[in-house]
Amino acid sequence: MTTLQFPSPKENLLPAQIPLVSPPSQSLDSTKVDRFKGSLMGMAVGDALGASVEFRPRQYLLDHPVSNMQSGGTWGLQAGEWTDDTSMALCLASSLISFRGFDPYNQLVRYKWWYKFGYLSSTGRCFDIGNATRSALDEFCRRQNETQRRWRTVNEEQMDSFTFDEMRRSGFDVNCGGQNANGNGALMRLAPVPLFYYRDPEKAVTLSGESARLTHGDQRAIDACRYYGALIVAAVHGESKEKLLSPNFYSEHRAWFGKNELHDEILNVASGSFSKKDGYDKGIRGSGKSVQALEAALWAFYKDDNSFEKGVLKAVNLGDDTDTTGAIYGQLAGAHYGFNRIPSKWTQQLYAKNLISCIAEWLQSLGDSRFATQSSPQQTPTRMSQSNQPQQYPNHNTSQNPLKIASNPTSYQPILTSSSTAARTSQYSTPNTKPGFPTNNSRSTAKNSQQHSSPWIWYRHEQ
Image 1 (cartoon, helix red, strand yellow):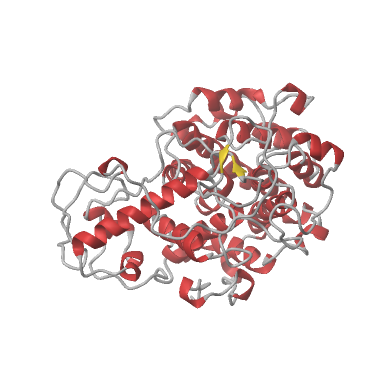
Image 2 (cartoon, helix red, strand yellow):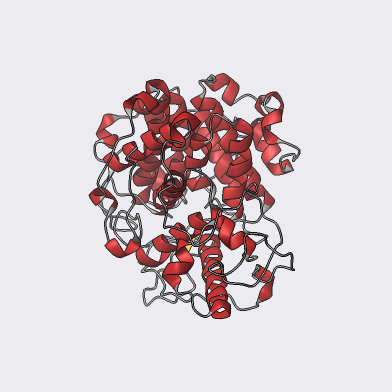
């Protein structure tokens, strides 16, 4: 089966330039595809609608409410272009498709490519990145560099071509998120995981959490993704909106969550904290924090009068982290309403809409094991046999080059962890930033540590 091929960062292809290949028609379920496309396109539409007013406070949105996609504003994008939310989701989806499954090391590699080279960015550069995400990717780069130093003969391109199983045997810790990283940067990119694994809800929920842990180590950020992943799976399976928003959803789907209970703050949201008539006046915020972002997206879904258009505009017009609130809303609302109920005036204007649609089809096709086994994973050929062990995150380390180590790892204490060094300095240049409007959230932190000549400073809630 000929599959969708994603470029290497060296090819410098923009998303709209990637050649498209559709999956076999017999592998597609038209109803499910409509929901998959709805989720991914809904995410990108919400992102693009909020992009021009990102960081604008609520009062500005009350005076100048968003009603359509528009050019200029925060990032100077063209109408329909999207930000880091969609770029990272496409990186995640490209890994799932290329590896026919969940490879956390490769996911981080692709996030790094976006950060360093603008991979799968609508503009070809990384212009928008949250603090927690940036810190995690800096830590990932540091761990790669430390591993290269120890192995000596391995260059960066070789490091990027290894798989999770290979790096796991050498003791590489892929969980790079800080323990207190509680931003919404994992929630904003989530959809590809629950979509790909929707046939196995328990695995979908588990891996939704693990996808967050790579960059966000706070349990609230992890459990926000677990809960939202469960909602997306249920939406794809056609559960009613009433059930999705029910305070009993968690208890009725408890088996999906395994042994680990949700964090109390996520349980509070699941119990209906979002169901507030007056929204902003009652504390709903378009915040960069995971719990508040989850609550805001669910509030918009609750208040959308069964209209994607109304709901996504409610999400964006909360202000502050407008693109991410819109993107999070769009993942669930799009899965529930389907692609055909997203206004065509927006989907037609969306940058790289054909690629996003094609990716949705492949996620649905390859998530079906009948077709996933018909071709081998699209990845750089590896240098060693694949492990037969199940994917996990054990504390094994050989401190050896995967080009040389045997297939059976020897157990040592892990060395490549966030505590192995006090220095977390990026080896790469800081992405370009532009002056803009500070948020009115006093808990926000500076988006980048780099000083700017402009009197304005960019802020990003702790994504």
